[in-house]
Image (cartoon, rainbow, N blue to C red; front, side, top):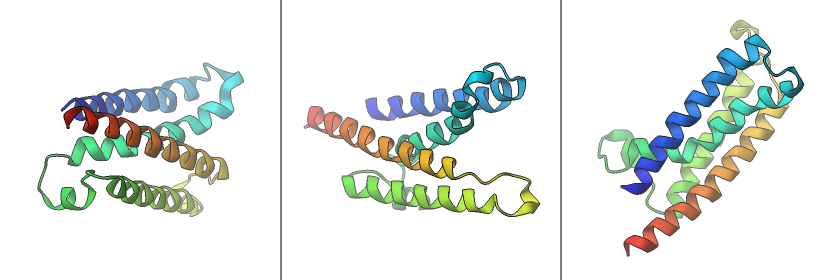
Length: 135
């Protein structure tokens, strides 16, 4: 229960930070000297939250999607992170289509992979620690 509550807190806080960056700080140019970091921060933070979001949304549930994304072992966490990385790559390459009006950036892919790797290792360590306390 502790890990689920912590995951919920991470997701809600992370979403609020990402929204603040995307809709307040960047448009109003409140921190012009940090424009590169503010450009990659939503990707870095969003990909860091993938493992925590999967655990919060799918642990303890039995409906269709939760059967595939339930995190009970390191293998399950790896599968969620690999699928999340695939979706991040597809999302970034779809930005090459001019219809969407978005810009493609390799930095987004690099920092998304860094965030996802950090998410995997931090959630794995946290999950191990919680499982050791339960046992």
